[in-house]
Length: 378
Image 1 (spheres, helix red, strand yellow):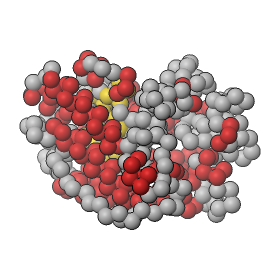
Image 2 (cartoon, rainbow, N blue to C red):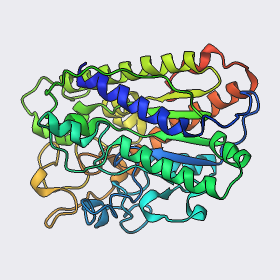
Image 3 (cartoon, rainbow, N blue to C red):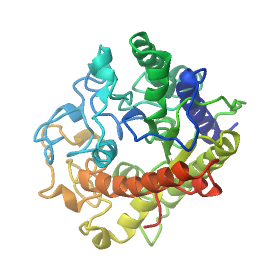
Image 4 (tube, one colour):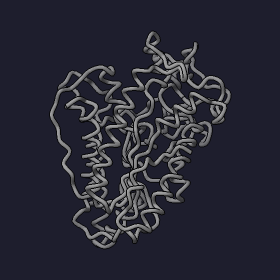
């Protein structure tokens, strides 16, 4: 099995195993869905709100130093952006508590309102598996580690809650898998293949709502544009065409698997969040989305030139600086989005989430319309 399909399969399997930790508990009918109360988040640096700042091998990284966090928080918070992430806007939009970074919490009170397990640099595939194929990841955390942490939290919550209360916690939560899998491709230098057979075993999910984001357009990232300057570029966007084709393949495989899960578990919401489409549109027509004239350049860094990216002068390093107005840029540091781009993506997700939620609350079983992407064409 190619790494593309394997990564997607393991991502979904790990997600379902995490959500299925409470599968033995009775669940409410699909027409009696409660208001969302919390998020349980998984992913990498696009979703991490502080774990990498605590994890030993990543503590003290760029996101813990200025100018990270300057736009909204006025200080670094461990978020890989100038301000808020997609998950921050989702939390604000649904008016639920900010989930506690897993490594920053210890008690039931700290986790009862949601937990963020995402770690910057995390991979979808296990680091040991990647190492067995000669691919070294710089952060020894995978999605399977994050779901193990989720089991720990669930056991902690179960120790202070009745079975009925734990069921309500799971049923009223959004299980959000932010972008994860990009690091697998980066660490393997994009082209490396893995010929390993794997299967996706369907398991019953205890969660009611699972949101899985697709991969961003790889070929539009300043870091990869700087790494592959001689490649064919899409004339409409200026992005590296073959890298975007890889992301599209990943996303199509993910959508197909989510479709299979919807058919196997009609009482659940499996929602696909399409980051790719909105980033492509912002890059192709920046002015229409409120961005400036350099949609492929990093706001912060010391690289200069067309993309303002250099691995040796990454944002936050001595001699680097941020642009005057990050809201005019799609990319913050050449790898991660600005707060402005995160807001754009999150607003589209919220529209889709509210719409699908409304459909699910009135249709039993959920109609075929639930198969539509969470991020719409609006």
